[in-house]
Amino acid sequence: MSFVPPLDDFPILAKPVNGKRLAYLDSAASAQKPKAVLDAMTEFATTEYANVHRGVHHLAARATERYEAARVAVAHFLNAKSSDEIIFTKGGTESLNLVSYAFLSPRISAGDEIVLTKMEHHSNIVPWHFMRERKRAVLKWVDVREDGSINPPAVAAAITPKTKLLAISHMSNVLGTITPLKEIIQIAHAKGVPVVVDGCQGAVHEVVDVQDLDADFYAFTGHKLYGPTGIGVLYGKRAHLKTMRPFQGGGEMIAEVAEDKITYAEPPHRFEAGTPPIIEAVGLAAAIKYLKQFDRAAIKAHELDLYQYARDQVRRLKWVRVIGEAPDKGAILSFETTSMHAHDVATILDGEGVAVRAGHHCAQILMERFNVASTTRASFGLYNTREDVDALIVGLEKARSILL
Amino acid sequence: MPLLWVSKRRGAYFSDMIDDSLRELYQEVILDHSKHPHHFGALEHATHNAHGYNPLCGDRITVHLVLGADGRITDIKFEGRGCAISQASASLMTDMLTGRTAAEAEKLMDGFLHLVKGEEGVTGLGEDDLETLQVMAGVSAFPMRVKCATLAWHTMKSALEGGSRSNEPAKTE
Image (cartoon, rainbow over the protein chains, first blue to last red):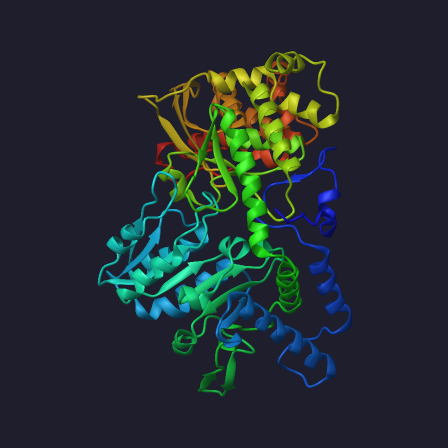
């Protein structure tokens, strides 16, 4: 274990909460930002900022350069063939909605099917419900195994000649399950079905190679990747993007506008209507650069070590039931507490400075599947330590003593 | 360890402010109500029903009541699942509103909503009612939990207003 959490890079972690040392265990909801990201955004905004792709002045050129350089950084981060395959959006949710509207909608009709798994979170569910409502498409749900893992043959079985898309998470935000993506994408492609991957968690904890995966689309968000809010990414294969209709209409996405005729820009700009999140793109590039200075495998090992440490401690508490123990999983610990509601537990943990998520985690179908109304979730980031886990366990014991 | 915590609930152990707030929030009366809720279950001859749902946490509640010919609420029951705060609040509500007229209930509901939001000047409530409601006042120190406390009361309101015709789940604000 060579990875040492760079606590000094995250000033917020040194700020006490409720008079206690902060144990931030909610990175799956949103990660804290290192100074390097905030500084990069401030530096850019105070020295090189202007709107992009318009204007011929010096700052417009500099800002355009930085914005497009961020696109290149993202392309390298995902190992995309070309930066033209990287679309900036306002978040993971918009990325998935873009696929729904611009790719799937013109290709799907009544009775056609979309296959998705029961562990998707709402942003990878609701855009497909739109297709059910508007195009009378059918949603087909692949169950997860009791341990929270995904069974590739079950995905294969759900695909029929009517299937127009498979939508699947790289990593579950509740169970931590890591999907055997490559195998599943091969299965789907063998049946002629394109695959959109929700990588909002996956991009943070796994090294992503979209070419190796052969993913058709890969969506992720900046703020979970230690970057700013307000920016997300959609990777799409160039062959798909070229055939897709625009998403929103506005400036930057057009080639020519006349009174009775319009032609659209080439991808990726076709899908970036209006002024994009420019400062945020610079911030995202800084977050990627920040991550790259570390050995990503070492970060993952560190996070998994914390998960295992927490899992072992929690196992001693007979009144805790862990949900999601797939053999291949990332550092997310979701659990139910006997006779104690997650919200009560989270309130008491907060009193101890321990920040966790409680509720349905925007994954109500999964909650239904495991027959729980809500769970408490501790999720780990690169800045967490065993001290955070110890605070969690102390807090849980305190919750028990107060509530029962 | 557990014995220590029990004694702390009676007063001495908590020292700092957040612990005091937590102690007030999860005081004995609240925990008793949540563990053994009063008037929990279905009500066959209900004249009014409503569903409440808190999309933030997924908590659900159904309130059933019988409104007599004289305009008094003769019976209330609730079903559902939720956190200690929402269950205790529902249980307390059924105790307090049984036997009241719809107008009296309305007044109490408004008073309660003011109280848990920490708003000053709750007026028009009898001393006994104020005292009973006071056990829920600790919620006002936890803004993220106010909706847990108000779910049952909003659902009750919507039951009285819309009766069994109301299909839209009650909102929490």
